[in-house]
Image (cartoon, rainbow, N blue to C red; front, side, top):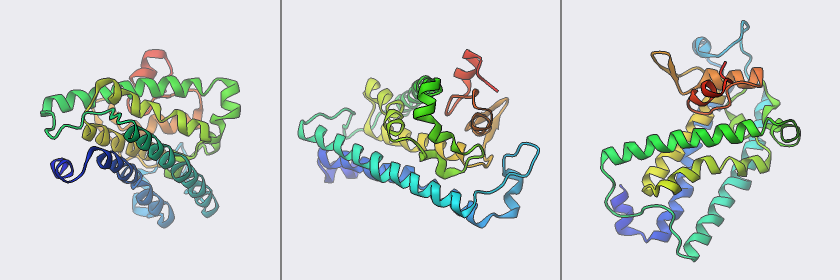
Length: 244
């Protein structure tokens, strides 16, 4: 597929395909919001609860989540991404590898694993910093409005925080000079992860003691506040004693 893009579009145009990737990265919001609206009883066993039946978000809460999510996505994420791409194209700065030939599978896996690990380290640092009382009160408290989260809460953020959490996603592939397709893939997976860990549904895969994605961990973060600051993997919380 990328070879088709390379043969039919120039570098500037290929960079703008990142905007389409961002839209694809948000598609699970539709799926989980439909589940929240229809409230299938057959999925009750997958709902995360704490000794009580987990309530579904009300229509008012879904409307609130949708409005704030749209503000973040259409008012901040897309405009900033477009502006960044436009400036880069104008200055002929292309931060990712855009060669026609894709890296071999081992190189791809190495970059993907490194990006996920580096992103989670940055996310942990930024997220835990946001729990400093002053920053929490003035910025991060917006995201913690709901203790029992639903998918739309993923983008329920203060505008400044929406911008700050761009960096864990974009810095690692910049450092590694990853191929643009690897950056696209990681951006999709990381945002899907964010949506899933806020969804209230435990659709995780357990590999031994490891749960992927870390749905229960992040759900507990919203419930108990000072635990589980990581996004994808629990290793940073275990390392710094904030794992629950």
